[in-house]
Length: 496
Image 1 (tube, rainbow, N blue to C red):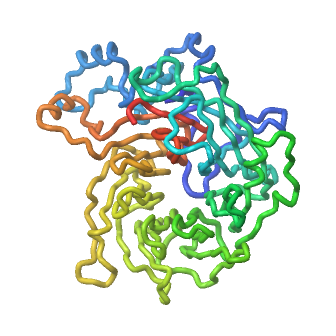
Image 2: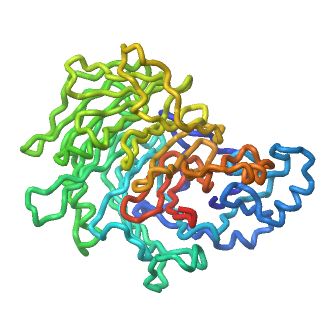
Image 3: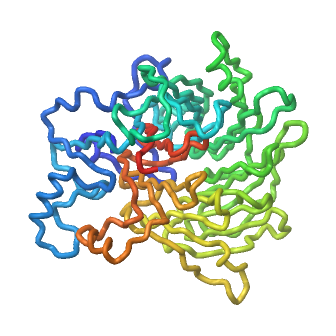
């Protein structure tokens, strides 16, 4: 629900697969890698009409009452109802966030769009509730094709992330150190010669038990090559005044050249601390790369084959070290076992008639898997109901929940790390939505919501994100989301 002009909105097209966004306005000072934007500065004094978009995309109470009185349609969404992500703004209209619905909200821009990123765990503690907050992330840029040499991996420290003035519940347990701070973005760049399709971070124990873990990144690029970097010194440099990054520290530890086409599937195994990496490409091939005892990397040149379309997403099982799943543009999700000599999937399920762009394996309840497709529908599956390929019980499964609220492709989906009923979804309709699958309406409540049939009761919150592409929950700051698209948003709502 950040502020964007109607002119910018109308010019934004959904992003998918290998499509690249237009270049962003770049500051003439190349050394300034990014900056926070004041979300609430002088724009409030503009003569443009401002629409307040609430948690479910509807206007404020007064306008809602006026529109409800004007509606003549019984039991349907009336023409006057504003639904974020669907209703088009008139010329001169802008969106402004309802600040009372956020505990924290910060936006930041980078020289080039970063359409894939990951959050790096830190040593500041788990279950943090102190403001201002600090976090570390890593992202890959998508520079204009004419300026491919401008691409880089950006290692970032975000600090001074304060709570909204007056935002949130006063009875909250959140702590505040009462410091009047401004948000700060610091970054270190690792040069790349190609734009990043997908980047993922992994931490592995240091050989010296007294030292911090080693942080590795795997970057799948448009060139088809996958680079593994050690960003440990880059992270350490933020908190070590005067430290410099050497050219040698910017070089990859390993370059994987097994893929002949670019791809989007990348995942580190959470159950192999030393480092075990999956990568999948547009040819439908999946390779496994393993870190050796000596610290090197070896890629098995025998691909896993079975998909008839591109690999859009790969994820290791959070509970079984040899199992992983993949989602494809062929509309299927397949489950594999790396111990299989045949390199064929154990289970193959047709879950959509459209491309399955993204999926998320629940870390809390590991038989639950969520998927999102090109038609805007996302669904939750119980893997216990899926039967091995070739058995008489195998066939098209029935999701335990599905939602078609979004009318553009799903671009990212992720389970809340500690609550198996909460799911965050990003879509090509420029929104990030939060869902509570535990919500069920009784008959009386259903009558109360009959006037807005297009709003599922499980929908908790709608956040505006132009060209929304990827999102992640912060694993150590409960309820906090980071999302990327045209710019980054860091936010926490009062509803989660």
